[in-house]
Image (cartoon, rainbow, N blue to C red; front, top):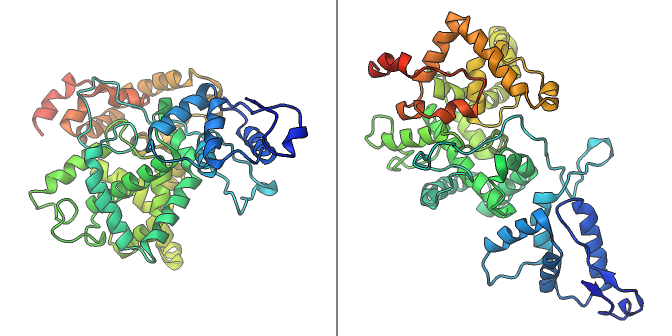
Length: 420
């Protein structure tokens, strides 16, 4: 579009073409757009987005189409709102000198994880019963998540609107990093506000379930007659919780750990952790929840004197926790894999992994050789395999999703499975 009139100042200007945008150099494009609108002030605000959309191309145009399709067709998109949403998708963080965050615009973390959350590659009939995140989103699960979010609001200090604003602000800081955790643009169909809401709603319920099975039912704030989290494991309704827990370990049905850790820092979850009496579980899935989500927060809340006196704990477990945090697992399943392998079997060089696309296959061969030569390792893999639900053990995508975990012959374990 070329414009030669629109204001008294613009009349004397040469014809200016509206800037085009394909997804690259977002800040440069935004600067030109704002300059254009300053020159042609008569363009109404509700027409700015339409004007910009005509000049979108490629990935930017595909994003715009999905963004508009997800909105109410009768609502008008303001330019300021549109800029915020498109910046989440295409913007680049620009920290101030010295690496400090700008007070007006926080530096959004955008480091891409080593592993990404991907869809289960098996036939469509293999679906989780309940959905977490964008890959297996199911509107039918929204009711329980809405109730979980209300419990968070009711048990947080301050007004609900202020609490919600805090959660949205915190997730916005790591939104780009969280989106990058999903492979193949699985979250691209969600607008910024939709994605943030999903991470908050799904993430809070995800954490409540985790804390429930770790022994924190009394601290969560649910009424005793709640159908899912208000009962003990002796209740017939506990099967609902087990179904949810199985869904938490389903391939692709994951919330990024960067989101879960950010949520765990909020006042509601900090209060639950502080008031609970936590013991390290022995069962594998609960152990993963404990070490990946709860233990780092418990340690932060312990009195400094306790940590100094209990030198044995620090000697035995602190180095393990430090190693696990250094690996930066993408999600719960990735963290579970790291716990199974341990630091001595996960000695990948991150720089070489980034430079060599074939590194993953070489690591798989090396780890399989170690597994074949170690009887202890074989036994560990069998114990790990048997710890998962029976139907999950049959899914090849479990092995495909985390390739370093050696395959286990189903036929060789048939007798063990039948004898459980």
